[in-house]
Amino acid sequence: MSLVIRPLSATDEPEWRRLWKAYLAFYETELADEIYQTYFTRLLGDDPQDYSGLIAEVDGQAVGLVHYLFHRHGWKIENTCYLQDLYADPAVRGQGVGRALIEAVYQEADAAGAPSVYWLTQEFNGTARKLYDRVGVLTPFIKYNRH
Image 1: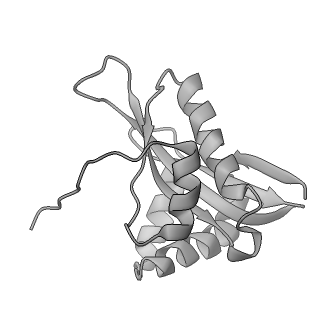
Image 2: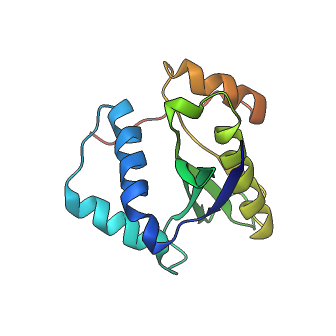
């Protein structure tokens, strides 16, 4: 297996959309086409408050994605990195794609001087949590959303 992790490019939009739709379907979410278009444009932009994206390819085929964002943290001088979306196609799960995408975000964070990286997942996401337990540390925080 020849795995490559690289930044998204404009020509990746159809494959990125396919992967992100599959990711959102896992979370029982559908979004308007306008959101796909806007998000992809922002992923390719140079505004520091927007997300960045990486894509995983195996033998030239897109099989995974990750989105991440740098932001300020009130308890630190340096920025922190939020890893928002991580997805590997079911056909390649267990082959290191998810780990490689997370480690690529770690490298981007280190290069940006933001050594702290965090993410969220749902409690029932057992498959992903097996990986997360190997590459991260589970925290005791509980998330709340505005009514």
